[in-house]
Image (cartoon, rainbow, N blue to C red; front, side):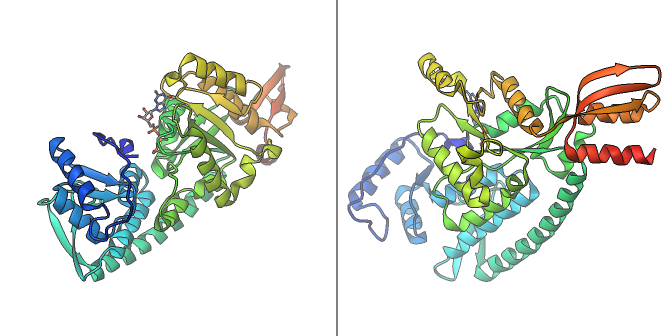
Length: 398
Ligand code: GTP
């Protein structure tokens, strides 16, 4: 997790605690051994994968002369570094402040604000701001109001998007699985003027061009993290609302990660929690998610061959490398097949003089056959029901 925000991990160690010491969590001996290591290696930050009380945190910082954060602090940093939408940033700041407030044991404390982060990584001596509970409370109230506004706007955006007749494909996955890399690769070609519409609405949504020429919207989401502290769950859920609205969900996995299977279980549990349990149900293949096994460029030949063998007959699993682009074509084919399933081909006659409608048909459907006579184009087109309705409406207007 620390590497996820580019921290340089000098050493990682499991420390046995027979009994937690109230003042420093670690016993005297362990704290001293770690102090030596920290001084020797000139370590600036220590991440403790447990919950530290504010007193423990302060005592350890003094003892070790380094910044100390716990699991929640690190997760907030990751969220802070990765939140790309205005709403995401508000959510993270709200969670960070609630966390800070819960840690104000006495009436005064120091909140360090620097580098646009939330202060957990700041060092002593950097610009410090003394804020009491009341000030934090006021800021929290203000953030809540802003968030309400953003949510209202987002509902409007969603409405606007519904009127744009493109299906939404959402990428989900454990943090660091490679979602953003894949998102960028798949949508790289699509940065024309019309995409500005989406880009300005939300940087996590972009146009996706499918092989048939059909278009979709690809939506990137925040990465999952297991054992999310309870007060972060709400912030996290809000950012995942988009997933429940998607037409198709693509689960991106890091095939190279030693905990890949456990991560998969965690992600599916969160999806089930969002009411999307059916996605992982093998019985409901039609609505199920597509699974991407990413980072295959990092696998040795044997592992890769083994995976290829295992997934050969399962069309819903795609082996891929977002970095090299290997497998991306297959993913697009799979996405297209899934979006097209349930769409029947219809026969249409469009007057050759009606270039606009012809263009519309080519943009929204997949033309599987075409025969022209002097007056009209006779087409066989695969078109969604919604699009078919729109087309009929269009033709009635003519
Ligand atoms: P979160 O934002 O935390 O959810 O992460 P993410 O899933 O968006 O992951 P991201 O795309 O940021 O990739 C994480 C790291 O994995 C980056 O260092 C990528 O360069 C690397 N990565 C992604 N895909 C591949 C791949 O196919 N091969 C290799 N070798 N590295 C990859």
